[in-house]
Length: 261
Image (tube, rainbow, N blue to C red; front, top):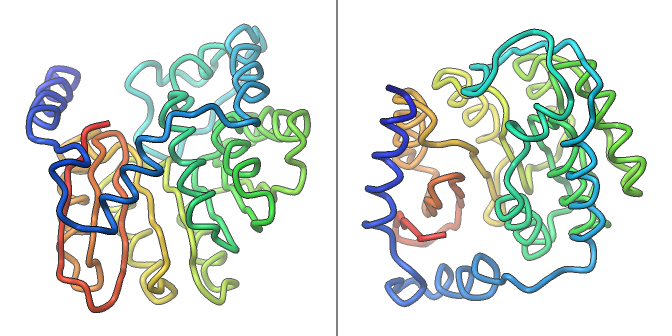
C-alpha cells in the first residue's frame, strides 16, 4: 500500500510540476536554469560514482542501528554493505543536485543528518571544499564504512559524529553562530522532522538553505512538509518530489513551487 501511495504521489507531482519556463520568480528561474537543470559533468563525479559501484559489490555484513522510520526495502538488523548501497544511498542525480546546491550557495558550514555510506557527504565535500562539514550517522558500523569512503575519496576533513540525531543536532546548532546549509536525510518521521526544523529556526538567516529528503515518504512526512511550508519564517519552498528546498528570504512574498526534476 505504501509503495502504491508513493507512486500515485509521484504521478500527481509529475503532472502538476513546472519547468523553468513556468516559473515567474527570477530567483527560482535562475536556480532552476543554472543549478537544478545543470547536468554538465563535474570533475569530482566520476571518482565518487566509482566508489558507489564498489560499495554495491561490497559483501561485508554489518549490524545496523536504526533510530529512524526504517527502510522501505529492508529493515533487518544484519545487512550487507552492498544491499545498503543499492537501496539506501541517494540516487546519483539527487546527490549531484545537492552537491550543485552546496556549490551555488557556498555555505561556510554544512550539516548533514544521515551519512549512510558517505557518498552524498563526499559530494558535498568535493562541491564545496572550503566549507566546514559535519555529518551525523546513527549507526556506528555504517559510520565506519562511511569514514572509510570519505578518507578514500580525499574528504577526510569532514567531521563525522555518531549517535542519535535528537541529541546531537541541538548540540550542533548551539555550537553554530548560524545555520547556512542543512541536509536532513535520516529520521523519516513527522514529529522528528518537525523537531529538527524548529531546532534550526533560531539560527537561520536570509541565505540559509534547508533540504528535506523524502518529503513524500509517508502521510506523516507529507504533513511535516506542509507545516514547514506554512511556517511564517519560511518565504520560499521548492518541491522536487524527492527533496524539498526551504528558504528564508526576507521581504519576499511567500511562494511555493513544484519543479519537475
